[in-house]
Amino acid sequence: MQTYTAKEITAELLQAYPQINLRTVRYYTQIGIVPPLELSGNKRVYTSKHLHYFRAVLTLAKTGETLAAIQEKLRPLPLEEIIRVGNQISVVDSGQVLQNETHRVSEDVYITLGPRVSAELRQRVIESVSKLVNGGDRT
Image (tube, rainbow, N blue to C red; front, top):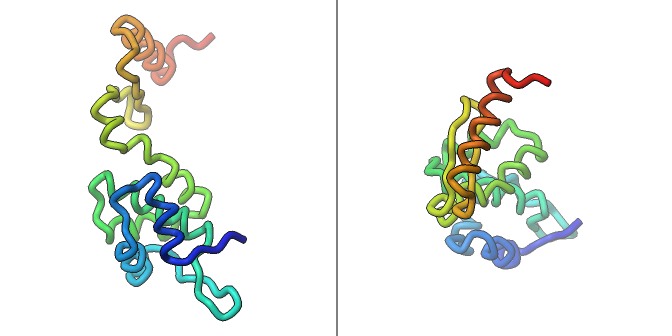
């Protein structure tokens, strides 16, 4: 099991989340938005589980969620879902949002296309996915 000090987990998170700092890591730990620290010998440490929680919290924070709302959303989720949420940082990365176009096909389906996709291909992709989602084109 990989363990981290507060400084080490902050350094690990800084790679994808430049807004994180040691104070934030400690604050999130203090308010319980991440699970309690684990004991390794006689020291309290962070683990890879904590790293996944921090990634999920920071990803949701980029969407404008409050810490209280994030805590409520994450509390009932299994670790697999926490990992999935944390891995979606590229979806909410502001640079990606500015460059890409996102189209809503249905309540549950969104398509995000990069700037190099031609207008013709973009339209064909949207039409094809819309047909599939709406039950058309069942071959």
